[in-house]
Length: 278
Image (cartoon, rainbow, N blue to C red):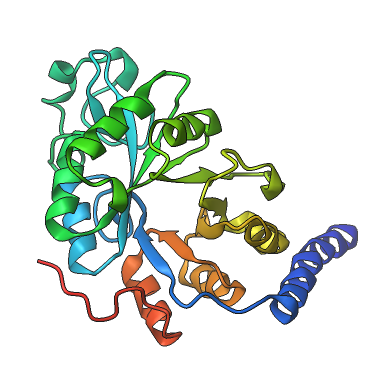
């Protein structure tokens, strides 16, 4: 037991020392911090639903983040998981189902599954930016082209940042539309920010828990000219928001945009402090 306690203390001491050193040595904090409602703000409303996206606008999130899949007949739809099992009254992989099969299903709050076009239209009415995460690209070759076509058709390229763990898809997006912004996602045990692709990616979206252990990734990304936004695996909590703000991140992708906005306001870093949306 004593050995275990010593090991635990050592594991906690290393990130604590890293954080102290980084705090002392980091550069100037960004003037503004962007607030993105993760899955529409999953702590406040049912994830990836119209209810969540409308609520994100009401609480003045700067962006809505959501997850994109493709049906067997080529319709882009909004759902986090590869299957509909967790969030709807149906079962099955999205890639194996047609839109005709998906449309009658109901999410746990009673809503139907949304199409990508519907979310873009909703965001355009309110002025929020969108952060579509292109999911499971091994299932959906070419989906990035289809998503870009929808955003282009809506005239919303400038208010869109595409996210993905599939950096090949992001590179293809930049080839198709050099002006579109992309964010390379980093998850567990991904530390080398200098390896980011595409080379002209404007943003790295780091897992907050990894940043807590190794905040030097922020400096590495900044040295490459990139912004640092963070998302959270299991520690999507106000204490983590405060820590990430202290480390000087450029954006919070979080489940509770209300709390995040209050904290960013306290540091006078709101991107849109007076903005009102319908």
